[in-house]
Each structure stands twice: as C-alpha cells, then as structure tokens.
Image (tube, rainbow, N blue to C red):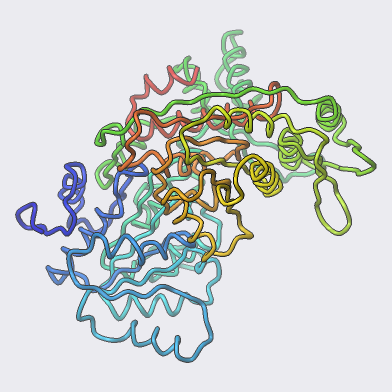
Length: 546
C-alpha cells in the first residue's frame, strides 16, 4: 500500500510514524526514542524495507531481548513488512542441520530482505561474535538494537561485544583510536531512553557512532553528573557516586556561610564546576547538570515521541491501596531494619549489605520471612498476609476483568495465584514467571487475550516486553522493583493503541511506613528524569522534582 510518494507501506501509518520515517530515512545512524505503544517496530520495518528497495541494504541484524526477538519474527515483521523477506531466529545449537541452514542464510546472495533476529544475551560472550561479523561482512546490513537500554552498561560484556564486536577496532597500544562499524546503517530503539540516570545514554550512542557524544564514559559522567569521591577506610582506593539531596543541601549551606567554591569542593570531594553549578542553580535537587546541552547533542539524530503527543489513548489513573503490617511483620521488619538480624519460627536471617536488606524488607511487606539456609534461600509465609487480603477484597469489588496482577518475588506470585484460585474458578486464574516455559506462557497469554483467563499474575520481567495486553485496563502492583524501565514497560502492555476503555487504572498495594513507599518514591523520581529527557524544559523538570 502506498500512502506517501517515495515510501511504500503495508499497514497504514499514523502521522507520527510517517514523520519518523521522513526524518530518519537515509541517516547512517539514528535513535528512535518512541514511547511504548506508539509503533516504533513498524517505523523500523518501513525504513529498512524501503532501503532494500533502493538497493542500499540487503539484510537486517535485529538485536532484542530474549523472547522479544522471536516476536519480531512471529508478529511484527509479518504484520508490517511491505516487501518479501526471509528471516532466521538465532538459536544456539550444535545440530549439523541447523548449522548448515545458518551458514546458507549468512552466505547466500540475498533475493529478498534478510532478517536475522538475535537475542541480546547471545552477545554476553564473545563465542558467537565471529559468526555475527561474518553476517555483516557478507551482507550490506542494517543493525537494529531494540530495547537499547539492555546495552546501557559500558563495562558489561554484551555492551562491549555489540559496540566493538560488530566493528573494526583500531588501537594504539591499549588505547582505542577508532571504531569502524561493519554495518551500513545502525539504529537504537527504546521507549525508555533513561532508566536510572543520563549516564544510560552513553553506551547506546557510542554504538551508533564512536565518540558521537564527544566524551569518553568517565568524562561524560563528570560533565553531566555531580559526583563525590569516596575513599575506602585504610586505603588509597575508592569509588565515585552521585551525591545525595542531603549533600546538595550541604553544599549550599557551606556557600551561604561564606566558604569559597574551592573550599566547598575540597570538603565535599566534588569538582569546583559542580559546586559553581549548584551555587548558580538554587532549585536543582537532582545530581545532574548540563542536561539541556545533552538533549541538544542527541537531537539531530533522534526522533522522540510520547503517546500523549500522537495517540488518542485514555488517561492513566493511579490509585494506592494502603495496608498495615500485622504484628509478626512489624516485629520482623523493625528488627531487620535496626539490627540487620531477626528471627521468625527459629529461622535466622543475616543481612550483609543494604541492597540485600532492601530486598528482604520488601519480602516481609509481601508476607514472607526470608530465611538464610545452607541449602539456599527459602521463604516462610507469615500467618496472615495483609497485602494479599487487600488484593482479594479489592478484586471482589472489581467488575473490569480481565486484570493483571504484578509481583516482584516468585513466592508472592505463587501465593497470590493459590489464594485467587480459591476465590475464582481454577481456569480463571493463571500465573507466569521464569519457571513457566515459553510455549506454556504463549498459551496462557492467548487465553488471557481471548477472555478465557480473568486474572493473570506475573512479574514485570516475563511480560514487560513484546506483549499486547490491552484487552485489560486494570493492573495491580503487589510489589515493585527499583527499575523504572520494568515499571513503564509493564504499564504500557495495556496502555497502547487498541485500548478501548475510558481510563487505564494502576493500583499499588502499599504497606504503610515501609520500603514499599520508598520504592514508589524512587520510581517517581526516575520517571521525572525520563519525562525531562523526552521533552520537558529544564524549568519544568526542576520544578517538578522539588
């Protein structure tokens, strides 16, 4: 179907998708930063298909999270491709037949557009890099990294292998002087371009073009972040970290007391430029600077879309269901928080670091006492579970089935499922977590989409990407992780094109005065940062996070 002069499409594009194709078409590399549910997959398929017709490429290497790469092959490409194509989904196998098929796919002259769909986890080791390099060398290839936040960590093996393994790396000694891509075109795509901090942008843009942002990673952090140096006791070794809001306030207290910029920088172990920035920008409470400059740097090769800008979608409504911990939970929570050890029914738990502590506090609010045992971690359910009973009570008032219940811990998922099976017909309730096989997951999802499952219990990691679940417009969050990316991804499974409800409702079940409230606060602060990077002015951003 031809909707625009020069470009052909199979499915009719929205205006924002046409705008994206026109803006990005022909660029050697670009970032497609379209919020979940706005159709970024279609935009990419339209671009590469038209490039193939112009004989500029003959193959695509699609890198995506495990499972999502299958969905590209099974759903997105067949739905949107306006031209004939052949595709192969990467599977690590020693089968001689599969190996022959793979070699033929790599080396045979392209008659139709080749799609090689590979899960990003395959880059976690360098074992298969020569094979992927061969694909790029034998074909004029467009490399797409979908959900590009999966390569945000510059020291992770998968990130290094994607950036350097798909290119010719030139070094002088150990210093990299140039990275020359083996591909003709490159693109990153994500709806969540900033998941924790602006630092997340460095590696994906380094993949697009070596030194595009003009700074190495550590210089990038120094230029856009406000960090302090922490020395380890009794050692010259140490590490850097972002300063806290309390430390930002301390900087201003020192400045207001008459201390010089140089003195404050020395006392707080931060750079003089950061002290000056905080002195001149009194409303700043986030540990970042120069964000307007960063936005302007990425703008020439980026197309940014928010759902609110382009789709007639219902508003998101957020509700909180508060509960009180029972006496058993309060005792364990208080002891664990203050003493880092606690006992419940003879089981002992020792928390060795803050990260471990936060996770175990979350398990307590979810209704479980996590016990450390020599044979591994096991959890003991408390006699009562206030959050679970609150979920059941609220569901009893719900007439908007089907609904989705999200929980972070596997023990929570299984407990929720078991409890809801008692309230509803067994076939009306299903659960998905890492222990459920892919084929069984697919069956459950299809039953849910056809209305045969009323309540789907899952964690964000298993259903957060690749699924269209807008048959539901109600999600419960029994518990959360600190990952704003996971939260946004799973929310947008139901808030996307095709949603017909007047509102989409998200209900967080929260144990009052506990880690549950802190997690939501952290997610909110990260969402504000993401909103700014997507398009808000610095004034709006700084005003909202106060």
